Image 1 (cartoon, rainbow, N blue to C red):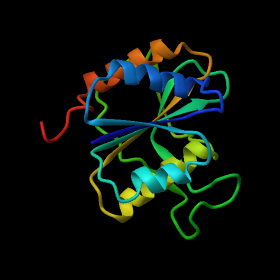
Image 2 (image 1 turned 135 degrees about the vertical axis):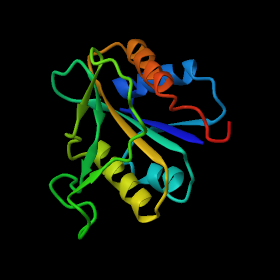
Image 3 (image 1 turned 60 degrees about the horizontal axis):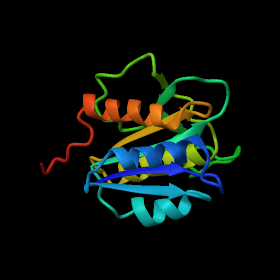
Length: 172
């Protein structure tokens, strides 16, 4: 099973929510669970990530600032609004990325600047959980440029998935 989630504003008009909707239309696969986060990500973590086995968890979040590429995040930081998420845990934690051998550098960039708000909280909490439970789940987080076209982003993300065979289940 694969989980793809996105953060949403109250109107569902932000880029990660619109891109998730387009991915959901494009990716017809019973092995994929699509979820939207409207508030703090703790509820999604407890309901969908903690105690649920996935082969792959993919997060989509809005990238603030004037960026034009999708950022493939490589690590999260133990910080949320200038406070520790989990005291006595590592400051930085590397995401257990799937193999990404093929990506179009015109549309994607590698980054280790997750930020310190909801995207980072969920990525850090998820990866810490995966590490502590010795799970083989792969974990990918994509920050999306907020001024981009959602359908173009969905097409590029789908191409990334297909070129790297990310959506193929181990059971297939």
